[in-house]
Length: 208
Ligand code: AP5
Image (cartoon, rainbow, N blue to C red; front, side, top):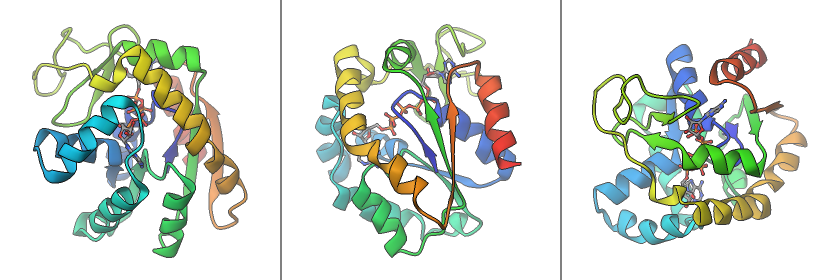
């Protein structure tokens, strides 16, 4: 599990880890954004909540993840990014007997997060993220691999980011103690301040 506040760099590091370890990424945020773009019933319900910076109900998220992990590509293991985000979601993983090898918390201050998210640009088809200054695409505004145009996420507006941070502190941060106390997993914390490459090196050294 990659764990941390919005904008800590979970998605950025996830892209490196799935290539390196040849496992799939399960990002509930990407799944929900996919549903919003496809205008499914779930997407229509999720859109407003996501735009407000709130959390989708545990029931919906747990159902989504349960069905995703049944797919064949998850049999070799997977990387959770943005899930679990509440204690009931973490308990549901235990009920489903999902073994968690490592939980890596990436932390960042609220000020850094506001800076990072205001400069974030996103490639919807792949979930690849960039930052206009700290992690810039080769050609400004376009994805490095496909050349598709990048977009800015609706929930990256400053007021929405502040709401997301508030919810993170109230509902998600308690998972730090939860996983620290869970004997069946390895919990690690790293400071997310530093270049993308420096954080990658820290993540890999933890996993080594
Ligand atoms: P989700 O998509 O999961 O968003 P999030 O957790 O808020 O995480 P982000 O994607 O914003 O940040 P990140 O940590 O991945 O950072 P990134 O690598 O992009 O969720 C969106 C919404 O969906 C939620 O608000 C909620 O409504 C709903 N949802 C999703 N899961 C849910 C769940 N389980 N339960 C209920 N609701 C759920 O990096 C950020 C920026 O910083 C980028 O621009 C990047 O290039 C840059 N950057 C990265 N690393 C560095 C670095 N080291 N130095 C400088 N810049 C960096």
